[in-house]
Image (cartoon, rainbow, N blue to C red):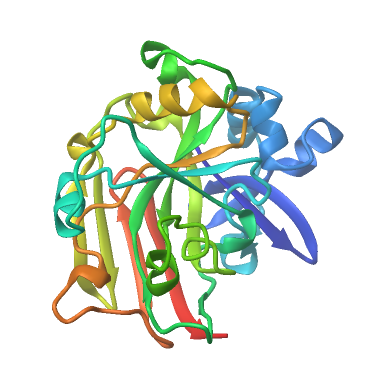
Length: 282
């Protein structure tokens, strides 16, 4: 099942994508689950799948304004330096534990919306990644149990303002400029993707392939990420883990490649779909 958050006729909603149309699930669940995060938290994904099969998809997908998959996540935890090629191109070393940083919800845009290049910098870079949406929360989740805590997966572009990121040892500023990251187009529920299935991730800028990898090359696996993060803070339904980008980022190319106004960047994951965003100057 592909689940989206969106606005339609001026109202926020969420639903299941069926071809080129949407089943409005928020109308089915009402106050029990007013948004997608609440649906996940209430454990209603299986019921939502049944409702989507039984209902008629009436809303054209082309007429909704997509929102980031989870518009209101409690936490967005990003894993850095998690593919060997990217570690090597940055001149760093593989760490025993995952390298983590946080993003805020305001730093994200939905599929089809423009990533915003701020006037403070021209060094806007792409980072194609796979996002994991937490379904069942928990603290100190064991690696062996981690898969069952996943609600689903989405594409992610961890857009970065590189000079602000590298100005200090901490990356918060460069990773959180307003509307610089893409999250979408939808969440594919876990039942559609096998646990530990090898997924292919590709990033394209203006049609040119810039990054390509497969998830079997992750240094710290998805279960290990969940176990590590949940050791120091509880994970909750709707939290998002962004699992790492491969080599080929613009900052490490010769000469560097920065995204500019008018560009189109795509992050494609074979088991999920394509996240596409334009770029505009603020």
